Length: 402
Image (cartoon, rainbow, N blue to C red; front, top):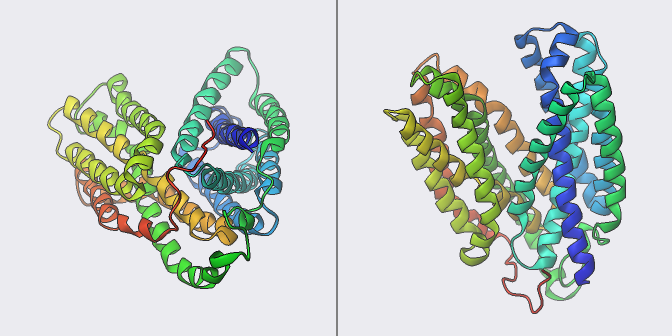
């Protein structure tokens, strides 16, 4: 069991890296695809909504499918689908075809996102200690790999269709090959006592009846936290450039600082959660994020703003993994559906973040718009106790795989 569990954890890392790489390969090719199709930035922004819509639909479909047939079947299929559809955005020469391609690719991305998170919940339950945050950290590693691969492809003179076709082929092989290491049990049988045994079976109806309200609260918190992430992704560099008159190269450090501290925080969050509990990670993390983004809103200098963005990334880093984990553990028989609800609403928040901040700039200066994310972080800190209603996970099992 130890060897199979270690293998399951390893291949879960593989799928998270794969997802980050596939999505990153599309992002790296955006300028070339924009030129190829002859569309404007504004048109591209509209088409990206279709990518988000497809992802949301894929998350909902995969969540239900996971609960019916299990992650061992859905994860590799979703990985192969996401990889295979990556080639589609590189083929069109008109915006209509590109929109359809992004819708399909988004669907595959959403399927992989939810199914791999549902499997990560199974792995975490089997380990008996928090391991979710590390999985989310490796998603960022995939983005780095995509940037390196994309830059190499450009230097070698590969066209977007050729680059994405190679990435699609390699990704499909990896998605199918890694399937052997996935946990064999479906979500309904990952509980320690198994379905229909002892008090677990007796408590299941009450727990499932209470789950929807709790899940939607988790989803609402995910929406707010991921809206904060989306705002940082698109507005951090512009804040330094337009508000504090930083140079273009210096302004880039705003997002770089945010992303770096978020990655480091996610690598450490599992240990912090194991020692102090997920409530502390969510409450203290969102409070630190609130302090950081408030500092950004009133920063008198570039240095102060960079400190604020660093605190914002560090504080947010462990929040989303705690919410996903709590959703997956709330009811093993509905883990996929619950994760899809939380991930889906959270993803909508990430998409909405940049737009909401942009709309607010018509009313107040850019730096003051960041008080809205600060407010969302404070609300999350106040509501962090919702994680206590999730079933308790054993902190120190008799034998832990390493």
